[in-house]
Image 1 (cartoon, rainbow, N blue to C red):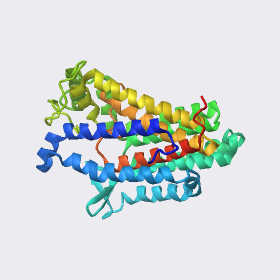
Image 2 (cartoon, helix red, strand yellow; image 1 turned 180 degrees about the horizontal axis):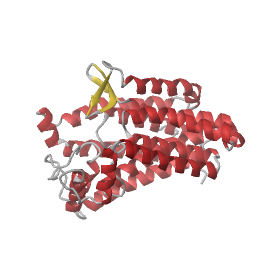
Image 3 (cartoon, rainbow, N blue to C red; image 1 turned 90 degrees about the vertical axis):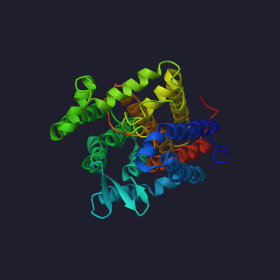
Length: 369
């Protein structure tokens, strides 16, 4: 089994999330699938075939590979992801979907390089920061500036797509790894200031980002325009109340709520399963975070610690941003809810990350507190 000598609790939590995700995609996507593809279970079937099955294979394989292997190929993996991020802009290779260049289509298969980028930068930073040592990490020229360069190279390509949500996850995850590796608080604060400046520039360049801020600040200002999605999401969650309207009984999935199987799936969960179901899902992510942090704390070396921190923070930040966007705590970003939302590429790389985390747990002394 994938969790042999590894963290069984982590594996169990992920399997529960995976099954729950399939159930909710089946429920939330039934009308959307029927409308778009004349097949009520189109999204469910594709998620199972192109997401869950290869995802489980990725988890199984990565859990068997000694995690130190990833340090050896970290540079190759990182630059391979950079090449794929460039290829999305090449005519005939990359394809625009909803006005964004995020996909590479290979016959019947599609691939989203930004999902690969999330894992590749985690592995690369873990290997690079371990090689620096704490003294050099704190140095402005040997730690801070190269770190900004690494983030900047990947960040510019992702913003070119554009994909602000993914950039946010990558930046937050990278900063978490940098902090745990021993970066100075002054440098972390400087990154925060630069991030706010960069966000202001992005908003000035593209008005639609400013519209998202306006919709976040006052969702009712334009309920049929820029505030439509968040209003429909809040309506769905509000309708669910404490116990929900019942699994499969959502009204918002009848083509009212955009992307019911994607970034809006948490709203459907809130509507159908209520506060209890939504809270249970959040608790699962909290438990997942706790197991990941424990694995990182007890990892046998710095690379394992940083790698585990990066993987678990990636999942936690992405889940937090998605859920917060659906309840109007942060502006809408369009990133998927880990293990739950529809998306084969996202799920495969998430499962690969969990496989690596399971392998680290095999080497960690999990008996420690």
